[in-house]
Image (cartoon, rainbow, N blue to C red; front, side):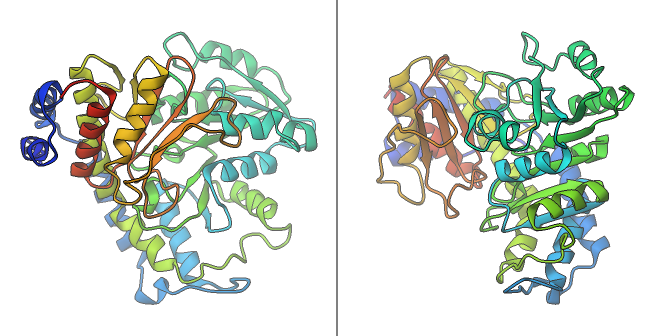
Length: 424
């Protein structure tokens, strides 16, 4: 698609986008038309090779009910996923309902009573920190797990000297690494950054496990955190890896013994990963993984246009259009509360589902501030599909996620820009 246009002129004409937004959109289109995505070429090749090496058969697309014992399709999918993620073993189940669920289960399995979890990437996103520290029955209270975090540097990067100093404490059983920015004005972390934290952990006396929150980052770079030595990665199957087809679920993947510990925590000791029905969704998981590299590339193209459009309109964006991306999240600093609400309302009007709904700020479990969201997904909550989230707090940034079809992301960005009052 190098040099291809995104049809902005035609889209603006069809939907009545005029004035400053239209002119900015045309400049944005010209600015991103020549972008290439070399990492995605490598990812596509790696996923294709994994399918051929795994030897997937039509019989692997069936499902199971009840306990899910002897589900050959589930075993095949998890083996395939492990190949893609550079892991020894993967546990991918419908019974893991979200990325947060996967992470908390992994932490509970990997940090014994009286030991400590160290967050090497500052304060985790609101829901996770709440589950670890503050909520009723949080791990720090119910499981007797200690928790410490190392603040990020002023530029948002991990403070490696401070991490090394924190790792001198022999009570640290696991180091937590968050790749994506969450709801925070910080850059996302690339796999090289994860690798440096792994090296620090390996050099410490206690040699703690390294657990990486992989949400939003899968298949964006040519390699995954397990390729860089992470002991475990965790995430959701209705983000990147599901390709827009997986109906739910989450995963953990990494060293075989560590995954076994998580399986025992998720189900029961002695049962491990032997059970967990797929209810006929095996085909959706396998096919979703097959198309996931293409979906992720479409998402990156849409996010680059969105960044370019709002940069042209004078807003601060991160990443910049054309910058190397490490996840499928685009931050746009709108600077005021009402602008966040108008942005979400505009984006909602472009949704394939619930376009006539109007987002309203409200409480979300695990978040201190009211949050406004825009989503019209075919799979509820699937953030590989176009959406946005914004906590109503300074610096009033909106976080745009996903976009299975680039042209749909373009339309959403145009509607959001018009609603913010940037022109027309």
